[in-house]
Length: 181
Image (cartoon, rainbow, N blue to C red; front, top):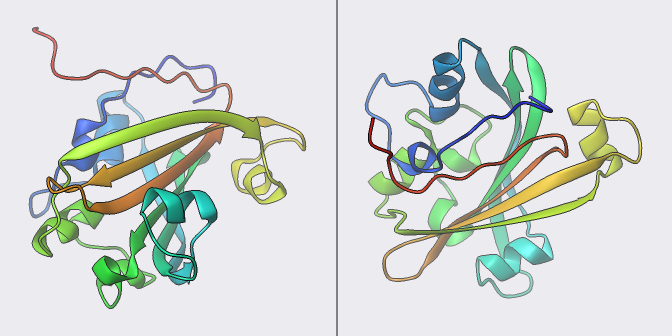
């Protein structure tokens, strides 16, 4: 996807899925005649990185549940996506297990009583870590874009912090609302 002008809408990624419905990334790629997929690399409790701990308003030492996925387009890696949840929300749920979550995280969170009402996204650039370079197939010293998405409930409770890391050649365009056809 590097170098492609790919306009993506955030809303489908925040909406619960209906039974039997594919995930938002699979749908988005299919609309472009491509094949979207993902590989689960890690799931379970871990210590929260400082930026994630701050975003989720957790105390030092509070753990999180992480789901790390390698996002694929036509079988090629295009993004690392790490989703973090407070243990108070996701501990002991399928989010903490190394398997596919039927309907996806957003659907399960809604079933648990957590519905996203506000999303804040922050984009930054950095040099890829060795691990990011390895997963994304980038040469050492490559730049990456990092998008940190914080989703909170209507009462302001942070419920998910997702860190998406992608090659810097990616073009990000955000659209809020629908355009008339």
